[in-house]
Length: 132
Length: 132
DNA sequence: AATTTAACTTGCATTTTGAAAGTTAAATGT
DNA sequence: ACATTTAACTTTCAAAATGCAAGTTAAATT
Image 1 (tube, rainbow over the protein chains, first blue to last red):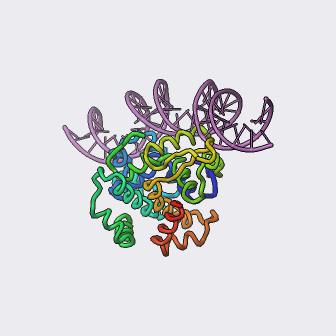
Image 2 (spheres, each protein chain N blue to C red; image 1 turned 90 degrees about the horizontal axis):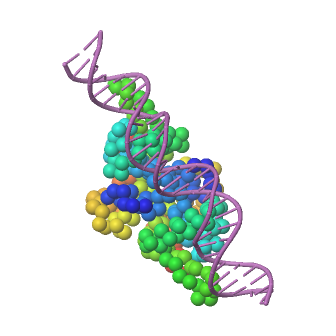
Image 3 (cartoon, helix red, strand yellow; image 1 turned 30 degrees about the vertical axis):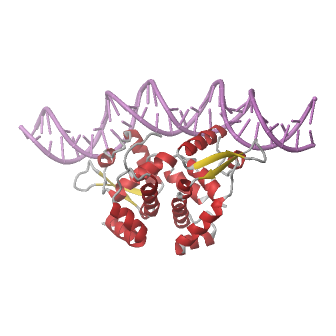
């Protein structure tokens, strides 16, 4: 997406303001997914061509990296960059929003509780987990 | 957008996961815009038919309300609901992300500073301002 | 009474999305 | 060694969403 304005919110949407990009980031962040086929098997079942084009954009936007798996050269490993990891607080706030406004979804209580009571600690812990 | 999964992040995107909805919420939240023509004049210049369809969806999703202006019956007043106001932390995190990863944008320093050092206070103040 | 304003709607071209099938290279099984 | 399977895509084409321009309607203003 081309830059639409100088607004910081609009800027984030220029990177992830579509239906799929943030779900890819979610899968890399919370579910330890790293390969194309991992990502294709999310609950939302995104079309493979869309997944491909989103990965390409996220990489060129500097939110993820792509590298070959040295043990199996068919596999490509996708990882979040620092900028990608820094989307975590945005995702946490979305979880909090849903816990309040869509309580019918079953969201892990502990996660919501900690997101509100110990944000900083949770963010640190998750960041460390993503990095290793 | 139909419900795609039970994921709380996906759920938020089902409401605002397009290029425009969050910008409408931003304009109602930060810029005191309340009418259709106000909203049409944002920097990003969204097409009028898209604005119309987004307002309709946001209203039916319970994020905004629409009422006639009693003083000028041509005008319709759009306002955030509680659920809409509760998107504020998500928007704040987007501002913080951009302040770190797109420093070329000129983002009010004070806002970023306070968002990080006094989140709770800032959210309270902005919420009060939105409500009156 | 004529003009302007506000909030849309309509029509149509362009772009994006989505579903399904196909391709290629590397790994695995026999 | 050869056939099969797996992983990561690409291609094709139909369907849906987006975007632009022009048109409509009711209420306010001149």
